Picture 1: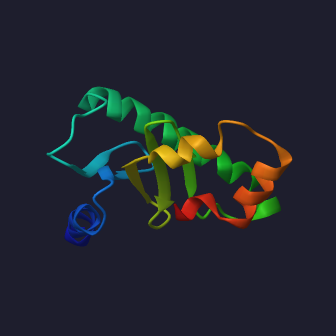
Picture 2: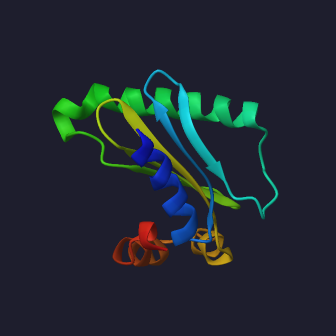
Length: 128
């Protein structure tokens, strides 16, 4: 369990765009969390917990289709300001990461055309 705390610390050190990270159980209990101190929080801790509960429910719903398409590997949702990443650690725990989104991310999706979509598929948006 202590390794999870170290994982969150390492995430903050390894990428300056990581704003917040947490380890939660599938029952919604937040075990560990780390918030970057040099940024303005977008959510209160209670709002964060509420968002995590919704994300956990969404993650659980993916289990309904795993027999047809396999287990989910990760989920990334990108907003104008942040990117939220959900990664299963094992059958009991999920890792949540909230990162700053760069301006180029919003630009990529500002005018959706076949050409834009094709370029996005060639340049994996999860790598930016």
